[in-house]
Image (cartoon, rainbow, N blue to C red; front, top):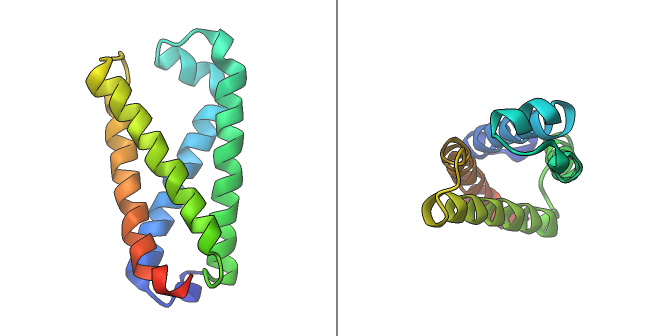
Length: 129
């Protein structure tokens, strides 16, 4: 499956990033109430959490398809995925560092690592997009 990338480092980085997406999809879409309770968020946010999980499910599926079909010609998809990832990171860092929102430290750290993995993979395959 990684062979379509012709770059083991990029494939591994983006594969780990895909596992991170899958983890958030499970948390936000399939175990919404438990995730909200663990983060001390009112269950009234169930709908928006599931919408976010659905959005990441779609992006994760698109990334999975690039493993199956190769990343060639998927420039817009990767730029969109990068924008979504960086925006997610910036929102989490703002809430953690500026607003001191309780429960955002772990997500800010995890999303920072996921963003780094995405950027490593993206810049290694950028010339093929």
